[in-house]
Image (tube, rainbow, N blue to C red; front, side, top):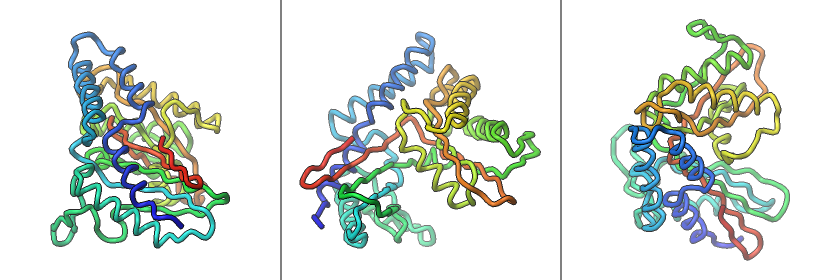
Length: 290
């Protein structure tokens, strides 16, 4: 198994400093939809200028560089212990080079580790063994502000009249967006998981955020739900950074899980406009990023 520490370091650098093309294109379209000279358009102008400067200077897109969350799909026989060690070494070096801000704080003592390494869950690394010879690593940097406005609901929900069906799902997701207002650094992207238990549902809601904004759900019912939620959320007029306007979310990505008959959870992971995600693929001696 090769030493991929430098490759992981480049993955972190790209994720932190270079916004994915589909996200940037969506922000540019959103800017054109806002009224000329409005606070919403001004906020998007500032965001887009920031995106360009971060890319040019290889500096973080946002001062909150977030929790690094890695999803690693590896070939049979690869050592997850070695992969984890290489990823952690790359994260520490990325922090030293200021691609990441030191974010790992011991909850009991309040002490910052200074290198983004904490207990085994910081950074978060999920491993899955898959067939084939390619190593595929997805990374998302999940900021604290948008993480704070995530939400989980148990249906039925009498407060807003949400039943155990997709209409009920729609109601609670919109409730989460409304409650977030501008605190999640809108326009956001929503990862929605329907079903599972409390833990697997939140896990899946973050997995959904790895999908590109311009893709389409393979499940026709979920594709309809995603499109309707995007349209409905943008009618709330919360707008960029909560200043009002036409664009409250850039997109919604939903995933369904099997559940126990007694439970019907809906989890919403809110991602800010700085939707920092990247994929690294190692195929033989070649490493590519997208």
